[in-house]
Image 1: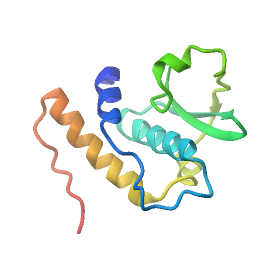
Image 2: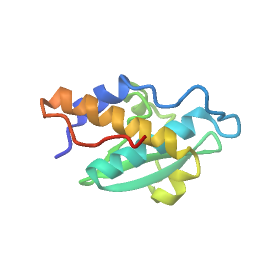
Image 3: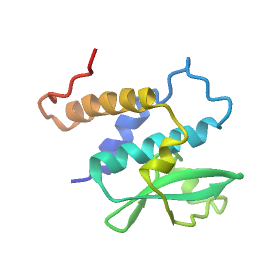
Length: 129
């Protein structure tokens, strides 16, 4: 089951990108949208989509026919500045914009927060040493 408000709240509390990682070649917004779209896909399923914003790819999801984009504040999504092409994308394509360590950190932080917010027992996921 997809919990939109809890997912959004958990993502707001997480630092998505390790500040020590060099993202000079790619805009931070592209890195964030690719990380978030993969996370949502891996946990909740659906589709990964993309569109062009300011000459860069922007990634987001579709779950049960609803467009889901947690990398842009909801208040901004209603403005005319954002129009979505809903071009199909893939995990492989999103992976071009981030390092796997950033994704692993995001995944485990999100799972811990989400479990706490929903009231679930802690997952048995453990980060390998």
